[in-house]
Image (cartoon, helix red, strand yellow):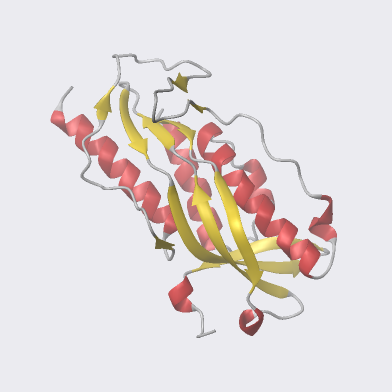
Length: 209
């Protein structure tokens, strides 16, 4: 495979990761110079591909089922705002795996630049026929950050875990994405009777606790 193709895939992965995780602190960021592992040449990846399991690598499958919409999105207070950030986080893997950004945009405030960048990054992957499997995002710990919260704006400080994933180019070239942990903050805003994600903030942007 041409070297330019390998470089393009690595650059696409690095740029997308920068969009998705800007402002986070990370314990295990992927190396941008790690050489990709070639897959058998295939212009048309399977509709529901999986990566074969080995002794040290579990099977990674495409995420095709969206998370359920929480009933508490329209509940005032911490219960509702926490439901909003949990839903937004749960949509991460589904959005990147499918290219369907409608649910992500529905929980995002119109002014959320990070939300728009995340949605556009997922759409770019789909438009370029790049396949992403796995990389589900989950919350290990979430805590309301009181100094940066008010009645209608709640800042949630979170420890996040991104599950292992695989990115495949249209030519079948593969880049393995390792498990990662990050700490970041999401801001939920109460507007028109429901909670929406308004912004993502890096830990270094928050006042000292």
